[in-house]
Image (tube, rainbow, N blue to C red; front, side, top):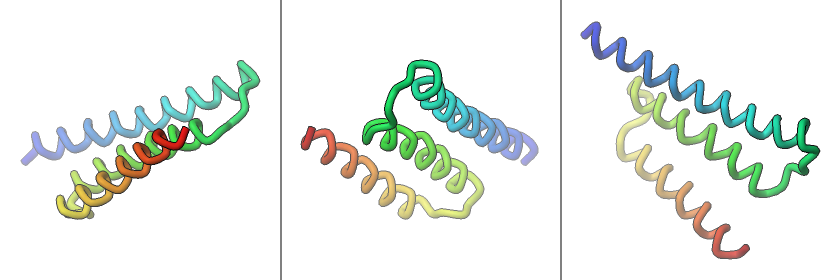
Length: 86
C-alpha cells in the first residue's frame, strides 16, 4: 500500500512538472522571443494541462477508466481535426 501511494505521489509530481514546463515554454516564447500567442500555443497549453490532470484524476480514482478514455478520444479527435484544417 505504501508503494502504491508513493507511486501515485511521484506520478502526480511529474505531471505537475510537465504542466509547469509547458507554461515555461510558452512564457519563454512570448516574453523572451516576442512571439504571439496563436492557436497552436493555446492548443499546446490545453494539452499540457488536460492530459496530466486526467492522469492525476485517474490515479486517485476521481475519474473512471471509461471516462478518461472518452475524454482522451475527444481531445485527440479535436487536435487531429484542427491539424487537418491548417
